[in-house]
Each structure stands twice: as structure tokens, then as C-alpha cells.
Image 1 (spheres, one colour):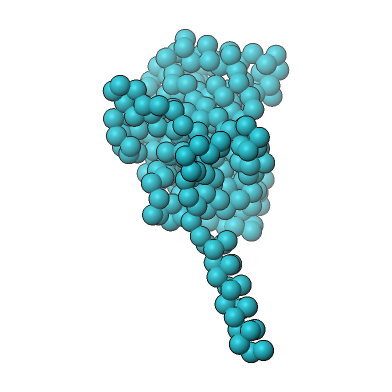
Image 2 (cartoon, helix red, strand yellow):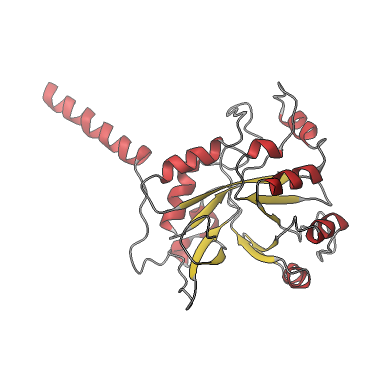
Length: 272
């Protein structure tokens, strides 16, 4: 009996290890959930999801899950873009270093060929709205907040006191690629027809805003697409995932997350 009991414990332990700490694999050839596009004559076609969330902001999963989903979907890269100013899990998961989510994801992706890109979501009210900054070096420098603030609402309000423009400039100081998120939000444009506010127009002219989301989740905006063409902004498609990719997009029923295609000379973050 002792031998049998001991064997059961060992098996259970290994099972826990495999489920809780095992690595994910890329999809097998022909897997219907794989998101794949052919290369061009001169460039590699890299598949990127540049807008995701985990429990380190208002998402509902650990960064390791995001890595596993990206691998299963056959992505070349994904960006870690936690909200800077909005931290609903602040009491349960305090993390004064806002790069923690990226570090967790990088550790989870170790041993795979997934490119994990550091980023953050600047989360403000209109006209700045929400902007993603990716390819940053330090998310902490995009946020100014007094020490000791633990209430979620107070944290958000205090964080918004630092001018939005300062956050955009801080991101660009790090060489970030900055894009305007879900620009078509009806809470900002009740008619559903977005317009380019002076805040973003001035940043475009200054070379500080580089792209705009035209597809986010289940939404696609023709008006935003036209704004991108009018202002020479990069077209961005994102999942903006907060829950599970399998819940939101049902890949085994033919669905998939929106992505951005990047034409690059090499399969590296630097080339992207």
C-alpha cells in the first residue's frame, strides 16, 4: 500500500508540473488555428499581436498563458501591453515595477522562438484616449504616481494628473512605436464616426504617433482605415485580449485573433 500511495503522489506531482509549468508548442502543420501568411520576394512576413493584457492590468490570465496562446496560434511575436494607469488587481497583485509582466512573459517564452515585445498601454481620457507604446525599454518611465497609493480609483486619478503628452514623449524617448487604440470608440464619438483630434494630429506632425488600430477584437472600422491612409499611419490589427483567446475567438470553430503583419528582413525584434 505504501508503494502504491507513493507512486500516486509522484504521478500526481509530475502531472501538476506538466500542466502548471510545462511549455507550449507551436501548432502542427495543418492545424486550423495556426495564423500563417507567405513571405514576399524580399521580406519575411511576421505575424504580430501588438495589444494584449494579463492579470498585471485588467486581464484575467497569467502572462505564461499569453505566451502559450501565442505559440499555439503560430505567432512570430506578441507585445505585452498592460494598462499603466488602470490597475484593478492592484491590491492582489502589487507590482511597483511595471516591467514585471514582460519579465514573466519572457521567462515563459524561454526555449521557444516566440519574440516577446515590451510595451505598455497609456490609458487616458479623450482626446488622448488609449495608446500603445511598444518596443520600449522601461515602462516605469511612462507613468508618474505618488508612492503609497493603493486604492484603484485613486491610483487611476493620480496617474492621470501627469500630462498625456509627457507619456507620449517619454515613450518616444525610448524609441517606441506608438499607436492609437480603438479610435472609433462610440464613447468618444457618439456618431460612431471618428475624427482626428488635435492631440493626435500634432503628434503625427511631430513624428510621435506612428500607427492606428483599424481592427480590434471583433471590430473593424472603415473610418479608421481611411484616417490611417490620410495621415500615413501604420495599419494595426490586434486582439486586445483580456480573457482567453479560445473563449474570445474560438479558433477551433474557424475563428482567429486579429493580427498585424510585419514585413521584415530578419525574424528579430530589431528587424521588426
